[in-house]
Image 1: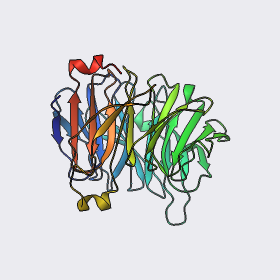
Image 2: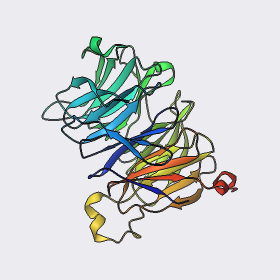
Image 3: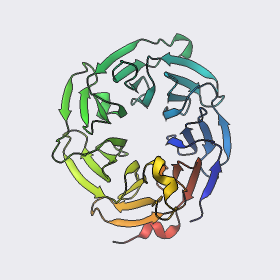
Image 4: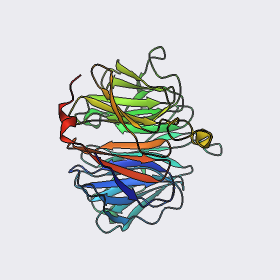
Length: 326
């Protein structure tokens, strides 16, 4: 399995997102320019220029027409995927951390960081069919959780919003009223900040990664803990295979302590676990810094990883990967 090295970012990667067909990969990094690539050969298609700070997160609409990006420049932008044109800018009073389109792409949930006395918030915006009719008004604003909310995603049928972040609690909110419906159990939940959250292909369960060196699998409706995957390093990124019962974890020690160890000791590899048995299947090495972003192609036949080293590595699985027996 030879990786394709995609070099286009000058700063550490923050997020990777495939479109629904799996032919395009969008990468976000701290260098202000989200980039779109061909997902089969790693060729760069173009960049989306206009942000003035690190871009933390992005999402692509179901028809691959709209891209939404959240940035530290206190804005969230809508882009035309094909032309790279900026369609609309949502402005906030603090850095925007995560974005997620709802099923149907009519709504987007946006989280903003605590900043200069402003508390963190979850904002729901309505996305207009015609960009010229787009409004900046929030349909719903939820405040309450202390600390940064690193990720918020839509629950089944857009009825709920699932959020997780610095205070290590996963919360499920009613997306109509903004009422808190459920909180994760402190006993079985994460002990340190949650860095990443990803839903399964069918939305029935989701996976969270945390600096407490573990990833946990949760039921979306009841918020019960299903599985825990323990590693020996902080987890920065998680992904779930849409094809096989595999989960992938990436991480490494904090960026500030990287230079004191060599890259083998840093454990900068993507680790694969059996989703059901919680056993490690294998790992893919390669990055020269912690892995910050992971994504499976929707067909489950390839994956990409983005690191602190500014590279995106695209891996197409060998045939024997699909017949791994435990």
